[in-house]
View 1 (tube, helix red, strand yellow):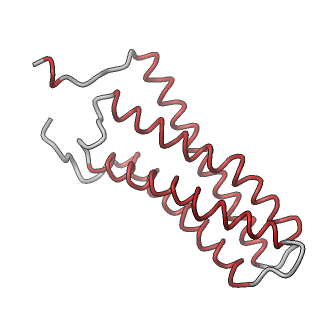
View 2: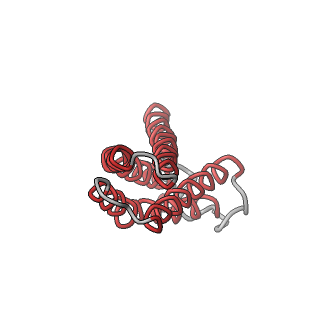
Length: 161
């Protein structure tokens, strides 16, 4: 049946797309780990006038673009390869986690970083500093989870095709 066949990329294009996806995802994990390191440094009271503006710069210039690139390339891989988006539990879980992470980086983490960078010249409340550690730590945990899902591919198939 012609309608049931999966769209396939030529090997050259599949490898390019996969390389872009892995690169964006690794970059995202490293960027988030850097923001987490800066958040912990800021929570410990170290030079908020330097720490939070640096974290905000990294978050806005690297974190959000890497999250969006990882999401877009992951969706394209799902659509254009036999893995599909909803054929395997691990792919569907990665899609949900990556989408949630991209949205949260846009609506939670980036505004929090901007707020802390703006307040860095004065006293930054300890609760606000801890929120950033919690948020960036949770983001790192989600990214490590997607990494584990990619390697172990647990839970089998969602569909028989």
